[in-house]
Image 1 (cartoon, protein in one colour):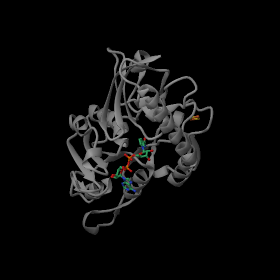
Image 2 (tube, helix red, strand yellow):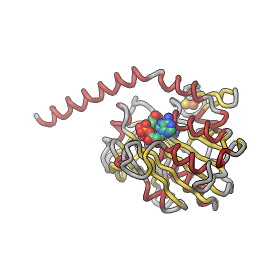
Image 3 (cartoon, protein in one colour):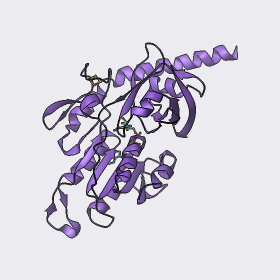
Image 4 (spheres, rainbow, N blue to C red):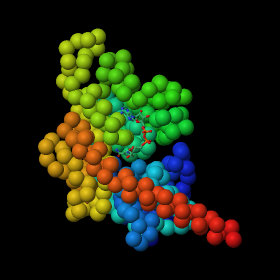
Length: 295
Ligand code: NAD
Ligand code: FES
């Protein structure tokens, strides 16, 4: 069992949970994840390790309560325990000195971006962070990312904070040389966002309509469906550079210009109906539980 040390809501449906997991805290490297189960027989949920304190023996996870299983996990208060926290899993982020690095987080993907951006800054890169969200209320981790970023750019779809629009409005200015131009780009968020970023950095137009310029190395962290997390079940397969890769053991980070995003989108959509059914059942369970407590 893994004790929840703290659990706070940091955005709509997004919780920061600190969990006692001393072995994971000691072994983890940036970019790796754990698989969490709330109870025996519960769904296995892959979650990026946002931070770890090896001395305290704790790890920090950001969890967006989108489906039945994640709602049950975030409903665990401090002092109670989670059944399993297995890991660290996956390959760590490949770290090198790139120079200027654009770190782009879309919505709750910003939580996955955080450990990568921090590790890149510790590697003496100049990190320029872009956070995209629908509204100002949904912008997460701006202060935390600000601690090591050269500059933070916010883009909201309704214009309630920073630039009005998607993260790509900021990236376009970077590629045009109106903002610091990146030598590498890391992007984490919804699949259409990662695909859009990859298209923009694949071959891009120079400032003022100059000749097309070479691709900028671009890395994405993929959120494939995972089951065992150990390369056995094949559930997390993605096609990268024409080859089948398993996100859990070959990733989760891949060269964005090689990823088959259409295939990833199809696989993520396969279980949508089942997820909606499970979500309805979770709501019913919570309703029955609250009535039982009221009686
Ligand atoms: P969202 O739909 O609110 O989008 C967040 C931001 O991403 C937008 O405001 C915009 O700036 C950018 N964006 C979205 N679509 C874009 C597009 N087509 N072009 C350019 N920019 C675009 O995101 P959310 O609801 O906070 O996050 C949920 C999604 O993120 C889910 O699909 C989830 O699976 C995914 N996710 C991915 C990871 C990962 O590791 N890649 C981690 C967590 C969540
Ligand atoms: Fe089973 Fe990756 S989750 S192979």
